[in-house]
Amino acid sequence: MKLGIVGLPNVGKSTLFNAITQAGAESANYPFCTIEPNVGVVSVPDERLEQLAKIYDSKKIVPTYIEFYDIAGLVRGASKGEGLGNKFLSHIREVESIVHVVRCFEDENITHVDGGVDPLRDIETINLELIFSDIDLIERRLQKTTKLAKTDKSLSSEVEVLQKVLAVLEDG
Image 1 (cartoon, one colour):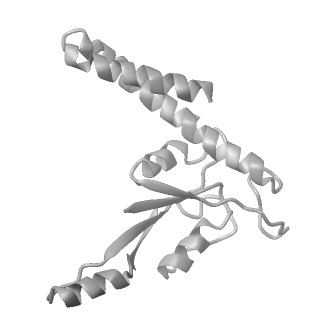
Image 2 (cartoon, helix red, strand yellow):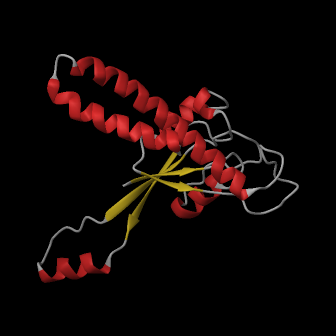
């Protein structure tokens, strides 16, 4: 499983990444300390797997693992290219699930990109940027698929699904 750690700059994404993976990625008090994603792999211990290996006399045990991606901080307007917007969004598309890190502590020594700590605002910022990015992707796919569906009727059901998804995203 590929799991992306996302959030605004300076909320603790790299700190969490390092705590989970023991990778030692740079973590600093300035926006965009992380540009390219840091990647760490952690195996997931499972006693059941070991018990099954004993029962079936397995010679090799292959544990499950999780790939963690420490993704650069997202800022308001990322879906329109602000900050590392498009780069961030392309990295987040590569993961299967996200962990959203939100800053809920005051510390005058750690800057906040929006000037002050407001967890609800920060959650909304990330969610909206992800929705705007999804809308853009769906609109482009819908345009392409609609054009292709004129000659390939098997694509008409995909067009319908894309239209429904777009409507849900636009309605919030």
